[in-house]
Image (cartoon, rainbow, N blue to C red):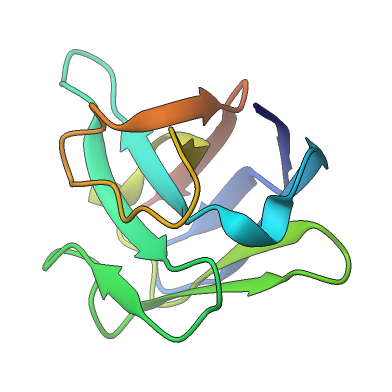
Length: 126
């Protein structure tokens, strides 16, 4: 299992930017697909972005495509989510996620996520 800790959330005005980071510890970080999910108050958790273990493949929710960029640094055991052109509807708790098993791309439901971070709050004011 991989242990995950997020950082970088905060309050930003609409149109602004934030960068979330996810620090991982545990075995073989470079063998796991990583991703981000978010959950707004009163809403279900939703998929945001995913990156493969080797960073050669990324996938985004339509709602963030072109505004958010997911990346990873396997040498540092970190993943990141660069969020630009933020909108009030991006307000949520953001969770870092790692796949349940190695060399596996989890789906958007989150059912195949094996590890979750504690979450970091992102608030976008209008």
